[in-house]
Length: 202
Ligand SMILES: [Mg+2]
Image 1 (cartoon, protein in one colour):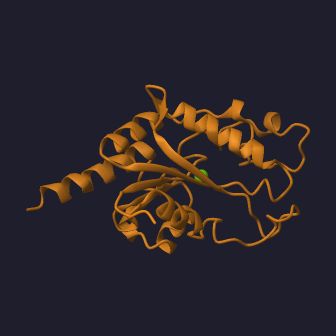
Image 2 (tube, rainbow, N blue to C red):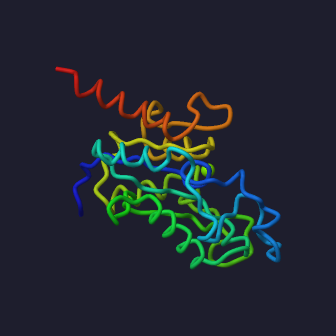
């Protein structure tokens, strides 16, 4: 078993790293009636939000491992296939790169939904946020110390997944919309300021 020593920032995917709500869903879902707004399943449609790449660079430079944790229930609902989720995540990891290497260590996703129609994903599952499954698995697989890690996302269920995994409430950051922090860049400022304050302590 790997020792859990590394700090990580868990990042939601859609509307945290890449554009989602602003996409033209009429166009994207044409001919696929089981998709609904929020289901980004085509790698060609992955577009980073302004400042996302720079935020990831700053976090990695400060020593944080970046782990994407995303719910992709369109698989359970029959709107997309696992291969499409994998391809979309791979495209995101490519876009968040520097010198040919992705800054994101791994992308975890939950294809589950309790009201889905596709087995075996049509079930409640601890991986599906607000469940802690993806964070706990990443911690074990990548040697992440959850007590010094953070989560950033645009939905309350992102925050709740962090809390369920045992992250300190102050390390679970809600961004976008009506949140105090506008975007991942603002969240990065909070994380780096906390790090600097901790480093300054005698
Ligand atoms: Mg999101």
